Amino acid sequence: MANGMTVAEKIFSSKCGRTIRAGDVVMAGIDAAMIHDITGPLAITQFWEMGGERVFDPEKIILLFDHQIPADSIPAAKNHVMMRAFAEEQGIKNYDLREGVCHQVALEKGRVAPGDIVVGSDSHTCMYGAVGAFATGIGSTDMGFALKYGALYFRVPETIRVDAVGTFGRRVGPKDLILRMAGDIGADGATYRALEFGGSAFSSMNMAGRMTCANMAIEMGGKAGIVPPDAVTMEYLKGRGSFDPVDIAPDSDAGYLEKRGYDVSNLSPQVAIPHNVDNVAPVEEVAGRKVDQVFIGSCTNGRFEDMQEAAEVLGNESFSEKLRVIIIPASRDEYLKTLRAGLIERFVEAGALVEAPCCGPCMGGAFGLLAPGEVSLSTSNRNFRGRQGSTDAEVYLCSPATAAASALYGEITDPREV
Image (tube, rainbow, N blue to C red; front, top):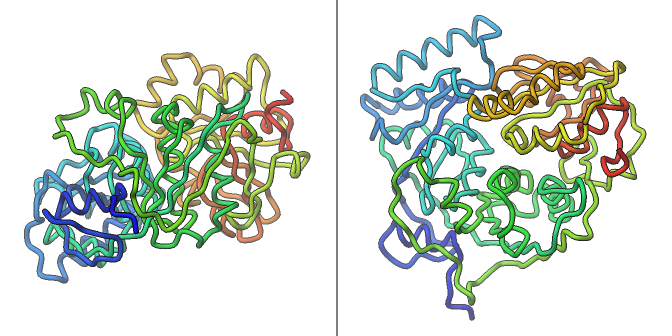
């Protein structure tokens, strides 16, 4: 029997001050709690209904608006007013609608560190695992409790270890890898498990790619997706805050529920087919499918590196007039990087609509909605029926390279052929 520990077990052991193993149920303190404009009002209401008067620590609460901004309805505007008042009353830093998508902002503002336990009232909170945190989405009742007490019960998850080796081919990248994983593991194959990512392909992967992979752990049912911190992590975190070093590297004899391996050298661009994220096929199997809208952005693929990838495919061409293209950097910082590199001008010249940092069409909560019968190709993380508008529309998921290539021709296109 393995005596070593996984990253998840080490994080909980560190926080609880004793040896913690997968399957243990513990009450653990949390290092950060994130709420946004969709789920925040529900969590705050629960906090009040539990008799909450003061939050456990305003410095550890991340609050912002990103799903429906600027307010696109009176109910949305009321939610914003409520949360602004709560932040002011409690002394919480409110990023409001100025900064961008919650998960991107939490990381770039240094609000999450390796070894942290972080909860968010959003399922893609697992993205913070890109810096070696145990981060997971929770419901509004749990969040109300967390806001009041600063702790929560957890059942420490078993871990699935995923090692990726090799070098990505031309116009193939982390989004293709995580889509392939989702196709193999299935939408519920990692339910309440931690996905621990490793291998040479992850060691050489930049933070943007790691964020993409950790973000989509939930699409396999994962409780968390974690990349053990290394020099790449520390370089990203430099200047974003002061953190105490923690030893959370997995032991060589750690006990895993399952181990999986990938050689990315053999990977082709992948596409998730409606209406499930685990319905994944190589791009060549769906090439030629007519597309009405292309969306490049979201917390999954809205970083500068994603914009560079799309721009490289675009070159000096223009997007097809047979479809509409919406491009949204994930945060103000990523927007400014894209702007200063001249890419926003290039995208606008090519016919795209470039929006201010927000979730945009991803959840179908604000704009970019699909009509019945329309088809979207998106770099976001979910393609459920009705996710981006009509329940009679279809959403395909892909990488920024595949999205840009397809936007050139108005149909799903293999980016390697452009």
